[in-house]
Image 1 (cartoon, one colour):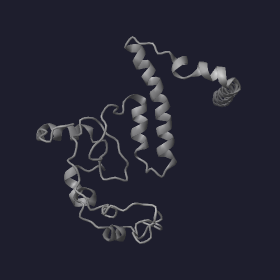
Image 2 (image 1 turned 90 degrees about the horizontal axis):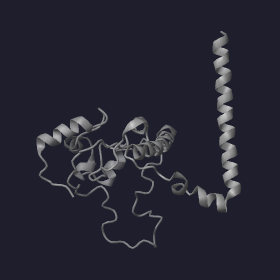
Image 3 (image 1 turned 60 degrees about the vertical axis):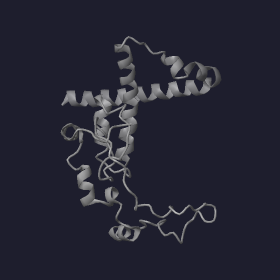
Length: 208
């Protein structure tokens, strides 16, 4: 939990240091630029803003609900945008978010802020919409790099991880030996192919 009476000066300083893009908006700007903060815009008004997008809001009509009659209605089902936004959690660490949102969500995790090479890649990924390959593929690469960064961090702290056990390779070798051999062969083949291609390109450049 966090304190609602967070020091204003400290909060402004933190926002200045951690807002990762000039395009991001502060909570004060939400009331001007979007309904997410105010909850004043109804579904019809929102739909009117996006009529140029084919298929937008296709499931917004309460009289055309594909879940009927399975859903148990409780009275709040179609309020959607008409809600009171919770108190904004202070930005104490860098927090990336989709460029399709005006800013960060009201509450978020702070234990793993972007850092290192994986953090650079994650910042790059969030320059793209969630509908773009560049967003998700870059995040996948960042995750793989972050695994290596985690191992290096453990070693620096004096803890040497048991990678074979933690990755389940012992059990994999025992119960899926054919799959292990296949993955190793595939990895070697890809590595050799990349090495040959890079070597050939280097020779061409050198011979010019």
